Amino acid sequence: MIDLLIGKVYRKNAGSTTILIGGVGYEVFIPFCYYNAYEQDQEIIVDIVHIQKEDGRETLYGFFDYRSKSFFKSLLTVDGIGDKKAFSMLMDKTPQELMEMVNNKDLNAFKKVKGVGPKTAQKIIETLEGKIDVKEVDMVLSSARSGLEHKKKKKKEIDNFIDSLDKTKTYKIDELMTMALTRWVSC
Image (cartoon, rainbow, N blue to C red; front, side, top):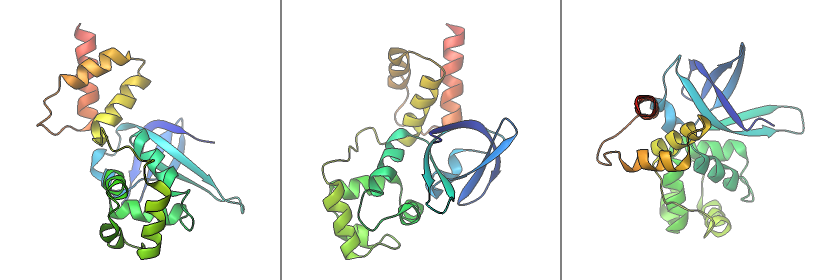
Protein backbone atom coordinates (compact mmCIF):
# COMPACT_ATOMS: atom_id res chain seq x y z
CA MET A 1 0.00 0.00 0.00
CA ILE A 2 1.17 3.49 -0.82
CA ASP A 3 0.96 5.76 2.23
CA LEU A 4 3.03 8.84 1.28
CA LEU A 5 4.50 10.27 -1.92
CA ILE A 6 7.32 12.77 -2.24
CA GLY A 7 7.97 13.96 -5.76
CA LYS A 8 7.62 16.71 -8.35
CA VAL A 9 4.32 17.83 -9.80
CA TYR A 10 4.47 16.78 -13.43
CA ARG A 11 0.91 17.58 -14.51
CA LYS A 12 -1.80 19.42 -12.63
CA ASN A 13 -5.53 19.13 -13.39
CA ALA A 14 -8.62 20.22 -11.46
CA GLY A 15 -9.24 16.71 -10.05
CA SER A 16 -6.02 14.77 -10.42
CA THR A 17 -2.32 15.49 -10.37
CA THR A 18 0.54 13.44 -11.78
CA ILE A 19 3.44 13.23 -9.33
CA LEU A 20 6.76 12.16 -10.84
CA ILE A 21 8.96 9.98 -8.63
CA GLY A 22 12.05 8.29 -10.03
CA GLY A 23 10.74 8.33 -13.58
CA VAL A 24 7.31 6.97 -12.66
CA GLY A 25 4.22 9.18 -12.76
CA TYR A 26 1.55 8.50 -10.12
CA GLU A 27 -1.95 9.81 -10.78
CA VAL A 28 -3.23 11.19 -7.48
CA PHE A 29 -6.72 12.60 -6.98
CA ILE A 30 -6.35 15.71 -4.84
CA PRO A 31 -9.35 17.72 -3.58
CA PHE A 32 -9.88 21.00 -5.39
CA CYS A 33 -9.43 23.00 -2.19
CA TYR A 34 -5.70 22.22 -2.46
CA TYR A 35 -5.42 23.23 -6.14
CA ASN A 36 -3.63 26.54 -5.46
CA ALA A 37 -1.40 25.08 -2.73
CA TYR A 38 1.15 23.73 -5.22
CA GLU A 39 2.58 24.47 -8.67
CA GLN A 40 3.86 22.42 -11.58
CA ASP A 41 7.52 21.30 -11.10
CA GLN A 42 7.24 21.89 -7.32
CA GLU A 43 8.37 19.10 -5.01
CA ILE A 44 5.48 18.11 -2.78
CA ILE A 45 4.77 15.71 0.05
CA VAL A 46 1.35 14.09 -0.17
CA ASP A 47 -0.33 11.79 2.36
CA ILE A 48 -2.04 9.03 0.38
CA VAL A 49 -5.14 6.92 0.82
CA HIS A 50 -4.61 3.94 -1.51
CA ILE A 51 -7.87 2.27 -2.53
CA GLN A 52 -7.75 -1.19 -4.12
CA LYS A 53 -10.98 -2.48 -5.66
CA GLU A 54 -11.89 -6.15 -5.97
CA ASP A 55 -11.71 -5.88 -9.76
CA GLY A 56 -8.04 -4.85 -9.52
CA ARG A 57 -8.48 -1.10 -10.08
CA GLU A 58 -6.44 1.14 -7.82
CA THR A 59 -6.94 4.80 -6.95
CA LEU A 60 -4.68 7.16 -5.00
CA TYR A 61 -6.22 10.06 -3.08
CA GLY A 62 -3.80 12.72 -1.84
CA PHE A 63 -3.89 15.14 1.08
CA PHE A 64 -1.43 17.75 2.29
CA ASP A 65 -1.95 17.03 5.96
CA TYR A 66 -2.54 13.89 7.97
CA ARG A 67 -5.71 15.23 9.63
CA SER A 68 -7.45 15.59 6.24
CA LYS A 69 -6.30 12.13 5.23
CA SER A 70 -7.69 10.70 8.48
CA PHE A 71 -10.99 12.49 7.94
CA PHE A 72 -11.28 11.05 4.41
CA LYS A 73 -10.68 7.56 5.86
CA SER A 74 -13.32 8.27 8.52
CA LEU A 75 -15.83 9.20 5.81
CA LEU A 76 -15.22 5.77 4.25
CA THR A 77 -16.48 4.13 7.46
CA VAL A 78 -19.91 5.70 6.99
CA ASP A 79 -22.43 3.21 5.58
CA GLY A 80 -23.18 4.08 1.95
CA ILE A 81 -20.16 6.33 1.36
CA GLY A 82 -17.47 4.99 -0.93
CA ASP A 83 -14.26 6.62 -2.04
CA LYS A 84 -15.82 8.44 -5.02
CA LYS A 85 -18.64 9.95 -2.96
CA ALA A 86 -16.24 10.95 -0.17
CA PHE A 87 -13.92 12.54 -2.72
CA SER A 88 -16.78 14.40 -4.41
CA MET A 89 -17.73 15.82 -1.00
CA LEU A 90 -14.16 17.09 -0.68
CA MET A 91 -14.44 18.74 -4.08
CA ASP A 92 -17.31 20.81 -2.63
CA LYS A 93 -16.00 21.56 0.88
CA THR A 94 -12.60 21.53 2.57
CA PRO A 95 -11.90 18.70 5.03
CA GLN A 96 -11.89 21.27 7.83
CA GLU A 97 -15.32 22.61 6.83
CA LEU A 98 -16.74 19.08 6.79
CA MET A 99 -15.15 18.29 10.16
CA GLU A 100 -16.74 21.40 11.66
CA MET A 101 -20.11 20.44 10.15
CA VAL A 102 -19.85 17.03 11.87
CA ASN A 103 -18.88 18.52 15.22
CA ASN A 104 -21.63 21.16 14.97
CA LYS A 105 -24.18 18.51 13.88
CA ASP A 106 -25.08 20.87 11.03
CA LEU A 107 -27.57 18.85 8.96
CA ASN A 108 -28.56 21.86 6.87
CA ALA A 109 -24.97 22.56 5.81
CA PHE A 110 -24.50 18.89 4.86
CA LYS A 111 -27.63 18.97 2.70
CA LYS A 112 -25.95 21.68 0.59
CA VAL A 113 -23.00 19.39 -0.21
CA LYS A 114 -23.26 17.82 -3.65
CA GLY A 115 -24.54 14.23 -3.45
CA VAL A 116 -25.49 14.36 0.24
CA GLY A 117 -29.14 14.11 1.15
CA PRO A 118 -30.78 14.25 4.59
CA LYS A 119 -30.33 10.52 5.33
CA THR A 120 -26.67 10.50 4.31
CA ALA A 121 -26.04 13.68 6.30
CA GLN A 122 -27.58 12.07 9.38
CA LYS A 123 -25.48 8.90 8.91
CA ILE A 124 -22.29 10.97 8.60
CA ILE A 125 -23.01 12.89 11.78
CA GLU A 126 -24.07 9.80 13.76
CA THR A 127 -21.02 7.80 12.62
CA LEU A 128 -18.39 10.50 13.07
CA GLU A 129 -19.79 12.54 15.97
CA GLY A 130 -17.19 12.94 18.70
CA LYS A 131 -14.49 11.25 16.62
CA ILE A 132 -13.31 14.35 14.73
CA ASP A 133 -10.83 16.84 16.19
CA VAL A 134 -10.93 20.27 14.51
CA LYS A 135 -8.14 21.93 16.48
CA GLU A 136 -5.16 23.18 14.46
CA VAL A 137 -7.23 23.22 11.27
CA ASP A 138 -4.81 25.30 9.24
CA MET A 139 -3.81 22.97 6.40
CA VAL A 140 -0.73 24.95 5.43
CA LEU A 141 0.79 24.90 8.92
CA SER A 142 -0.06 21.23 9.31
CA SER A 143 1.48 20.42 5.92
CA ALA A 144 4.61 22.41 6.72
CA ARG A 145 4.87 20.51 10.01
CA SER A 146 4.69 17.18 8.13
CA GLY A 147 7.29 18.34 5.63
CA LEU A 148 9.69 19.46 8.35
CA GLU A 149 9.23 16.19 10.22
CA HIS A 150 10.12 14.41 6.97
CA LYS A 151 13.32 16.54 6.84
CA LYS A 152 14.17 15.05 10.27
CA LYS A 153 13.70 18.27 12.22
CA LYS A 154 13.05 17.94 15.94
CA LYS A 155 9.51 18.51 17.22
CA LYS A 156 10.65 21.33 19.52
CA GLU A 157 12.37 23.11 16.60
CA ILE A 158 9.25 22.79 14.47
CA ASP A 159 6.98 24.01 17.31
CA ASN A 160 9.25 27.02 17.94
CA PHE A 161 9.28 27.88 14.24
CA ILE A 162 5.48 27.65 13.88
CA ASP A 163 4.93 29.59 17.12
CA SER A 164 7.17 32.39 15.79
CA LEU A 165 5.06 32.92 12.65
CA ASP A 166 2.81 35.93 12.19
CA LYS A 167 -0.63 34.27 12.53
CA THR A 168 -2.32 37.19 10.73
CA LYS A 169 -0.36 36.47 7.54
CA THR A 170 -1.24 33.83 4.93
CA TYR A 171 1.57 31.47 3.90
CA LYS A 172 2.12 28.91 1.15
CA ILE A 173 3.58 25.51 2.04
CA ASP A 174 6.76 25.96 -0.03
CA GLU A 175 7.28 29.44 1.46
CA LEU A 176 7.14 28.04 5.01
CA MET A 177 9.48 25.17 4.14
CA THR A 178 12.02 27.59 2.64
CA MET A 179 11.75 29.96 5.62
CA ALA A 180 12.23 27.12 8.11
CA LEU A 181 15.09 25.41 6.32
CA THR A 182 16.86 28.74 5.70
CA ARG A 183 16.47 29.58 9.38
CA TRP A 184 18.09 26.32 10.47
CA VAL A 185 20.91 26.55 7.93
CA SER A 186 21.80 30.06 9.11
CA CYS A 187 21.84 29.04 12.80
